[in-house]
Image (cartoon, rainbow, N blue to C red; front, side):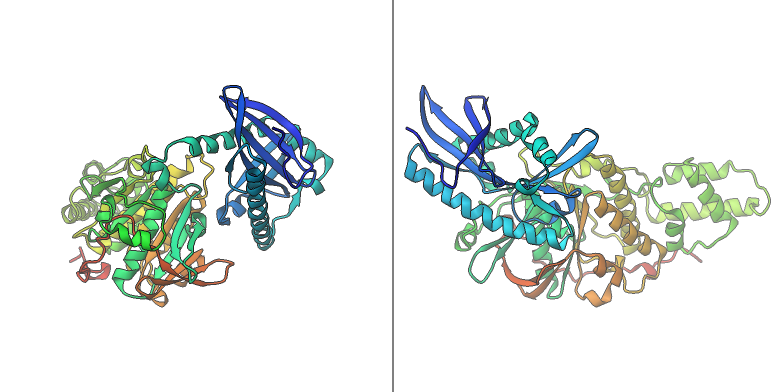
Length: 524
């Protein structure tokens, strides 16, 4: 049977085979590529998987665009004669039709409308980002030659559709129903009861504010789930076991069905880490001046000795630091008395926080994903810790995460997420401690290497304007599950949070607070 594809004429520019599938790429002469995978049974062709792609040429690296898209698209960088050519492709989403002209026409019509709707969004977004996009039809002959003359590009495009078709043929397993590709935040329902999805890259730095504490924590729970569904490892600084229920499926699956959420209840992979048994402070990463300030140590010769020893990496824990001080020879202002004073200060810190300063940590283990394609929750149990040691711990770990993810060459806008429930003490409106200012700078650097952060606090006016100003998005609790969403360069909107997939243990009494930094003193 001869099949005629609508909206042509379509001219083939690539034909190949991938496993048991015959593949084709066709071009309409107007920037649209039709990718085909023919299904063959015996000697008979019985159906076809098809997908439309619109091809654009970018005038610069389009990575910022990919962080903000809410639709499926591809970036292709091809180096030719020392020059990098950037191509951006949007897709219609694959579909399948048996070998019937009418049914294939229906799939072609659906693909046409889907891809042209996506194109409008793409061009509008590119304009706001000052990114120049030209259709391949209107690009230079050199750009056309690079795209249409590259077998690597052709094979990549055809193999992607083969992979999608194989998923269509495979019986739907639990995991394949649940895993969400491309880093999506499944927010909830709008007024029309439509599920609102956003690219997770838009929420890489997020504030959750207003409302009751339980409501803010619940919004964070939904965000953690979306990160895990997108295979983004999530590290939670859990103050009172708020989120330990994420490893158990919700028992109320009816709410998901009522909300037309096509996902099953699920318990996510979770690993608990206690402090200081499993997680500690690394002396090699902390800003020692900022740490000693928290202990009101002052600028004495004794403290200068401590700083000098740590700066030369002579000690990896406090016991080694004490030993290194004890072998110092008195000279100048650093008298025997000052050396003994330095030992007393370090011993007091060790006595106050025994075993806490014995890092470094295994960041790969803390932030690993799971074999099924899910991210894993790394739950740091901070129960019974005061705000000073929590501040130092976060400062140390954040720097270790930055070091680790700098070394990970992975082309994802979000490689890991850090969740900080109810941690306004880290970001006061008028920072009192140097370490609080350092943490703000480190959060910015973490974001640049793909480590995002989500912070919840009641009143945005009570935290430093630097944090609110640098946040890409903000979720404001209007009333329980009714939230307002503000995303950078977008109009705010309202949405009802979707029901959870896992058990919500954040709905508990959380009024117990540990002492603040300024109420704890090791002097005198």
